[in-house]
Length: 323
Image (cartoon, rainbow, N blue to C red; front, top):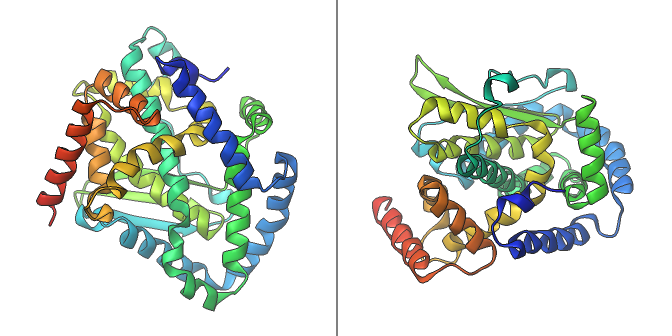
């Protein structure tokens, strides 16, 4: 049973996410089952890698440009972007320095744990929704190879669509338990002491996954605003929550939680690109209980008048501060 069922107070919240996931499954896989989608991706991946091979360096620069164009906060905050298309053996960015299970076994602050889990889901959701940001350069990509965009669409639909399938989730969790899971990319966020800047490092086998990982890295930076002032408590929450076994369902449900928040910005009279990520930061800063209530009400499209007023005032303030 999904842990998300235990995160929400109102059972209908999880049911809403489940329905959205079922609808997404039909849309993404176009009638394929997860085995067919997986096999299609396995056949398509080498074709994409071959087509991209002459343009790797160029595609890496395009990925950086995509991030900067669609997410202006990257340049505004002076974030450095390190993006590479690599071979499978080079996917080794993530080095864990988290506390051991023994160190955190007694830590049980549910509100903080639930908040981190939801923020992680939003991070994954933002990265899925941001993957196709490469369309801002679709004409340019077509000049490189006219098969790329169509193949990107197919493999993205297959790769992310299977996360809406119960059987696929079960298989992924089984593979993770045996350390047999495969990955198409990864990202990390580092602090450059000499420059005094944050660095997003992303590595991926193909270009669209590289874009995905860059967006994920950006939202990992935003997630820092969800922490409390207690560094030790934050460390223990991360150790409890940031686990590979949580990622499949974070990917499954996170895109819908992201959508529920993102719509406040896109439906406002303001420029989404200027204030979207700033708004997410403000949401993350909410006290744990208020954050939880706001997320749940947003998923159910039932925010209170007080919450609606907070959203409107926050968006207006952010717009005025960033003209």
